[in-house]
Image 1 (cartoon, rainbow, N blue to C red):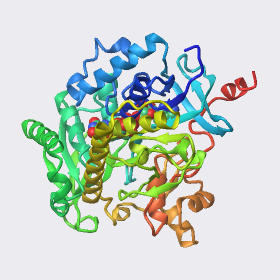
Image 2: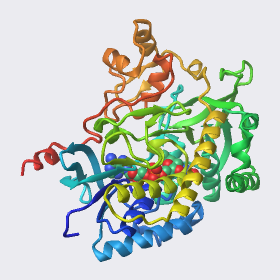
Image 3: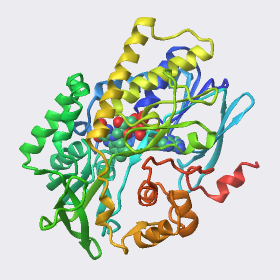
Length: 471
Ligand SMILES: Cc1cc2nc3c(=O)[nH]c(=O)nc-3n(C[C@H](O)[C@H](O)[C@H](O)COP(=O)(O)OP(=O)(O)OC[C@H]3O[C@@H](n4cnc5c(N)ncnc54)[C@H](O)[C@@H]3O)c2cc1C
């Protein structure tokens, strides 16, 4: 693209792809960057282009028709020079300037070499998605214990099954596609431990009844699990994992209504891999540092506050997808479209959607958000989850800080993850609290909404890349 960009989009998942397609249709010049090797984000994660013919993954996906339509449109715009698509580019900082935004990224195409890249545009749309939320338990740091998203990412991007006998645990419907995907690749899924009870859904029947598509998707997974004889155990959790060089077994237990293990129900199951996930945490690094206002969401996360057009509280800055509330890929696509329509309107360009279609998108967004809210309320983090931890359980893996040390910090008055960090170094390591942040916060705080700390550098980068900035 020879001309300066009108819009930078960070994140080429469902939200960023849909936003780019709408902005391009409205005549804007767009730079779309993603740290991954392919567009599609978490939901439409694919092997890199050169490996697709040898690693078939199409059967692991949903909504591929939309993915193909969006990809083909992006590819056509890229050939015409209206879209500058940069994969392997990780944005590590974004700052506001008088006439727009500067995004600093590292190009890792020739890793381990890192090349500094500086992008400028009057408007910025951040669609950086989410990552698996984790709760520690004894043995969670053993090799072979992964997040459920990690298990799925290995399958979708490389056709790799992390084990042959796998136990899954946590809460939320994401357990189901992961179990079904593993089973489809010949893995024996020995148990799926769901901490919530299906009855919890009956408390929010409205959004459920208004979302027949979600029911159909759920029923498809339920059939797949039945076909593979995968036992799903409601109100149950994986409370510890054991092993040596690698995990060899897990202990599961039924839970009481507050989430404590029910005495006498503990059971050991032999496994060679484990996947655990407690919903998602939005990836807010760039947005928090830019100073966006945050708001509470019912799933325990803080998310970016947006208006009905996905504008943040910072002029010229938009967000879409999981960053403004975890709600799934279909919602992310709709929000991406809305955000791009706002960019077009604010740039003085003609809209792509007419009034009627825009109203239809807004009403679909409202319905999907209501469903996401019901989902979050039906699959909460069990209040007493920390009763699974011994004082020796490592919570911050990077700095090796145990639950006992964090409990002592709380007893000394630390009441959120920032204060615990100052006293114990929990969250100060390589991952900067992405893995342990929500858990440390729950262990320390009485109020359970997690706001990530401000990070000036959103990904570890080499000094060489920083030095390049002066050239
Ligand atoms: C591991 C995982 C697996 C999931 N699998 C499913 C599933 O099977 N079914 C389902 O319904 N939902 C799934 N989800 C939920 C899923 O995130 C959403 O439904 C959907 O993908 C959200 O779209 P998005 O565009 O908001 O974000 P994402 O799809 O997460 O896309 C965000 C993109 O931003 C990029 N990015 C992030 N930070 C940066 C940065 N600093 N610089 C450059 N690029 C960056 C990422 O590489 C990613 O491609 C999964 C979530 C996770 C975390």
